[in-house]
Amino acid sequence: MRKIPVIIDCDTGIDDMISFAVTLTSDKLNILGITTAAGNQVVDITTQNTLNGVTIMGRCGIPVARGAEKPLSRPLRDAGYIHGENGLGTYQFAEMTSKQPEDIDAVELMRSLLAASEEKVVILAIAPLTNVARLLMEHPEAGAKIEKIVFMGGSL
Image 1 (cartoon, helix red, strand yellow):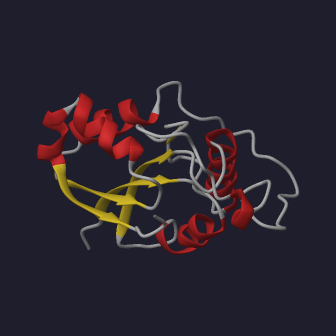
Image 2: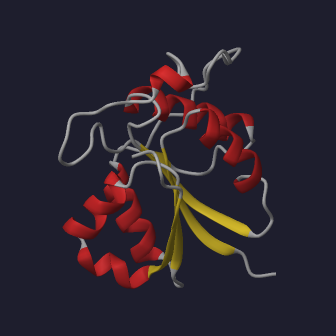
């Protein structure tokens, strides 16, 4: 069966972690990489949550890159009042993973994954769309390699 090539752009809080239970275990998706942004919490926390999430799901081979610290045109207003101080409500990881983010930022990881893919890629955008916007502004040619962008919206 052909697997759908996917890049996940997330701001890992409670909802994103739940989505990993579906996406990271699916035999229909080829997860090429995961990028993070500030949203449910600040980007350092969402990135650490993402690294811990891929580790727990046994998917350490998926590259994770840290992305946008704030929106493009306004100050950050994170959802810590919903997702808690650690972005995951009352859940605490027993230990932190040793997995580290890639040495390149989210936009560069997305650009390189798209360029290397032999087929068009689906972007699952479950974070603020800052990384995706920056990708298309800084590398408009990358749009030709995107099959579609599936996003979760509605916070504003």
